[in-house]
Image 1 (cartoon, rainbow, N blue to C red):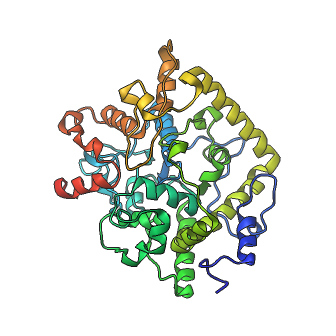
Image 2 (spheres, helix red, strand yellow):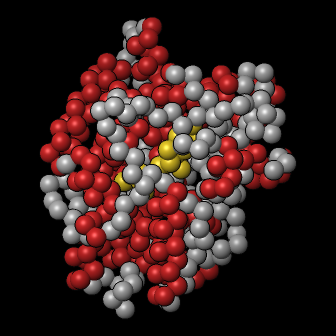
Image 3 (tube, rainbow, N blue to C red):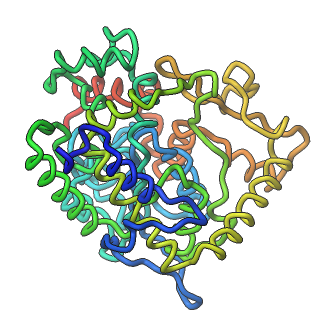
Length: 415
């Protein structure tokens, strides 16, 4: 049927190309699609300090987490950190307010930033965060996401017997069991992270359309801004303006990023199968990609966006020259400081950085914060906010990142 995403047609490809509009082109779709809540900066705006970032999976979200960590850390803001020194807010369970350290004990009176992995549940989040909180998240093309997820989460039940991603898409889905732990990673993970059922009967177009429309409507109601990973620099400019932050606040280096050697090229046929399998995520992505470019056009303009992106890239290059030995990322075996080694999982090769020798004082601190991996920075912030609790919890939990962590939580924590 032409109103589903199960088969590619010429018309469908035209719609997709128009909706994935890069700078310098016009989006036909963008002009007719509604926009998420406005959060537009102006010359008299005040920087926003109350922020919720829904950290989605394999979307460059770890880099954004680092931006938020550095911003809050430098201003002594209070983070809504996971209970008991965990690295996630008890994902994949639906978020509950008592998952945040300091809520049940009433030891924290006010939280500024919430940004660790969680499965979104708006009423519970609002119990923790102030009323004027700014909500944002980021999406990525589900085709590229699926390639990354298959590599990173290869050991989950849905994937572990599949010889390749194509093998899973052709055959593995037949034995796909939604009740097995962690199989949610295998299908419509964006939809799942936003708090919706990620399993849909794609053979019934009406169900697909209804479910997609419901999710899109709820996301537009709850979030002020949805960013797009493929246009990361443009996304940072929109975020900077929405939060009334400075260029220095949003400059970053890629974190939790794979080596190119760990990436696989996908054929157009494989891409079509991924879009069909992840039909809900694909619809979310098409919609919010369109609203993204509409927002660029209505709040920044293409020419000004080019100028601001250029300034951001120049600032990043300047920082790389100052901070990074050899100017860029290296494989984990080459990271010299064990405290800066990124967590490795699955078949992915997650790269890290080495600092230039001879750095000292504020410059070294700033450079080190820019390249500190997620787990280590979360640990540092927890120690800073809850020094009296830090010795209580063993760092054995650190190795249970992502879904492995949840197995430990279920066995050892009272939720």
